[in-house]
Length: 148
Picture 1 (cartoon, rainbow, N blue to C red):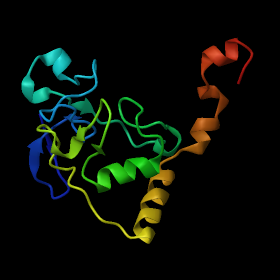
Picture 2 (picture 1 turned 180 degrees about the horizontal axis):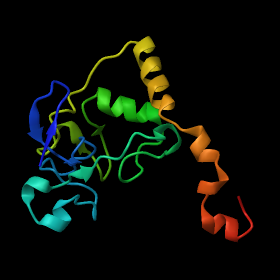
Picture 3 (picture 1 turned 45 degrees about the vertical axis):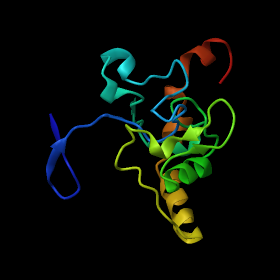
Picture 4 (picture 1 turned 45 degrees about the horizontal axis):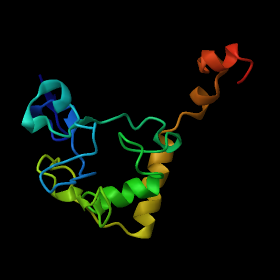
């Protein structure tokens, strides 16, 4: 299957990515048991690749990343601006931006304070408050326990 990019060119439909979150051993190591899709495929090229979630309601879905290791959207933007995360010390130390399977789309960037504010505003605009507060879509388990 192929996808079409912003320029209308056909390309592969890639659904799993590595965004440079960890690189514990310098060879692509992640926190056990987080092997990504390679846990299921057994392929080295799939090591530490994870499905990219939707951006819908992203402003209200903290914490972020597959393991909840980034607490805020500010942390997420810092992560992508750096082109991946570097952890200086401790058991998870490593340069995620140097992960061998990191997506070529995670290159880092610079943004002015105004551009960051615009990015936050865009991400907040993806929140559907009407949907989130509609009781028809509330957690049925909370309702059955008398909580809403």
